[in-house]
Length: 103
Image (cartoon, rainbow, N blue to C red; front, side, top):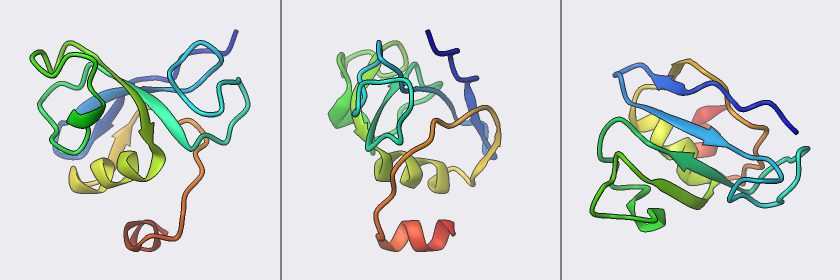
């Protein structure tokens, strides 16, 4: 089984777990990737960009977010100033405006 990714921490203090493996809510559902959709878990604050993917919208910091598109993950990271610690799974990225800013 693939080792879990370390919790991702953004520059402004926002944090979340981002997992992608054969047991996570991701696509493809394997241990290699690259992943077009990933699982986010237990963000430390409400993040409107990922709320549509929440298993329990009533408890946004105590739930899992299933099949979150990689471009949404990138938007969240950029919105919070980039990341300063933690791990990202290998993700597929399209050529959206935000992706071009990321590069």
